[in-house]
Length: 72
Ligand SMILES: [Zn+2]
Image (tube, rainbow, N blue to C red; front, top):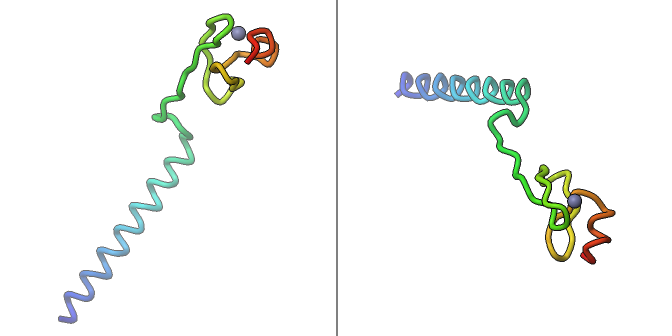
C-alpha cells in the first residue's frame, strides 16, 4: 500500500512537471498555433483580423470611417 502511495505521488509530480513545461512553451510562442479569425469589411471588402476590425450593426469594418460611410 505504501508503494502505491509513492507511485501516486511520483505520477502527480510528473504530471505537474509536464503541465508546467507546456505552459512555459506556450509563453515562448504565444498563439502560434492559434488561428486568427478573419473578417471582411462590409464597405470596401478588405480582409482583416477580427481583433482589429470595427464592429458595426451590419457587420465588420476596416475603420470607423467605413463604418460611418456604410451607416452601420
Ligand atoms: Zn473598409
